[in-house]
Length: 152
Image (cartoon, rainbow, N blue to C red; front, side):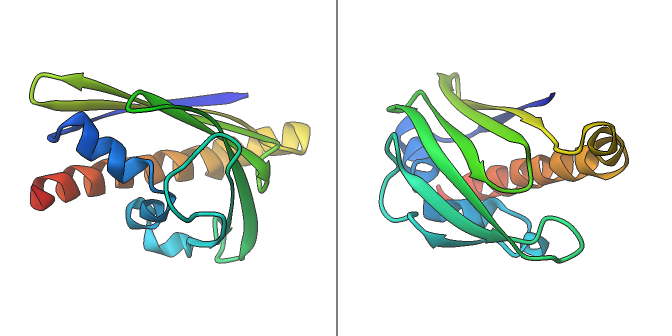
């Protein structure tokens, strides 16, 4: 199993940040365009525990695939968790934590994931997947920081 932890400082109040991140439709805005990300079902309104969201994504080589996640936990203006139900990973558990700090909000993403295919999956992780996952979250940091500066 692998884990990625990313912290992002957002210059906004907790309510504004929570309102943005608790709306699944906003995920497209912070996902790199080359991922071909589109919500196909279940992304309406505000998130809630038990919500199932289906996406079409192109994570590798432009090959489209279905990714289905479930929102398993939500604590208003504090955190939420999404877990993969169908998709490219053997396991995907993504925690999103939000803390009001001086001048804004500190958001922490904790992604725990595993790949299928044993040693072959480990090799693919080393050669390709780790850098792709890290690049997605670096992209998100830039987009989020820019979005909240310009939106205010």
